[in-house]
Image (cartoon, rainbow over all chains, first blue to last red; front, side, top):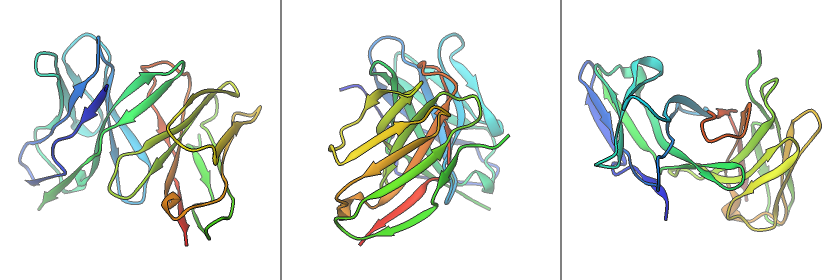
Length: 114
Length: 114
């Protein structure tokens, strides 16, 4: 079945250190892939997307993600973590149903310690 | 411009009751999608509407229904509530319905079924 997977329930990183939140995909063809972030008691916010072109995608708040076709991965990265980056992160892809329904991964909780 | 607005923000119901959740998309957005997010999980797709027509339906029972009005606002209705319907219900809008469209989410309606 076509899906995205986030292998880590939680990631802990110290402020100022680089962070990586992992996502792998099982989608046929050339997938569109997204990252969204959810802060406490809030809806989801769009961070970035990969459609085609450069494998390194830059997004909001200094985040970037690298599309790797050979490893079927789309990991989210940031060179220097902030305490305010602590949130729930979701990898997602749109599945064609006539319209498009966005399928979300289970989420990874990021804790950035001061 | 206002973002996606959802009402009510919180709701407590008892088993067997009916509930109506409301969503107003960003001005100019013609697509509205509904998601259910159970604590600790990623959002699960329920419905997508575009130009007042249903374009996608997730794996939810017929107790769940929705509609989109001429002004593109939307309602999600759930009949015969079960305890398992307790969740955060998220509405998202987008300008179109293509695969590359990013979703703009409201803050959600927290439904508790007792």
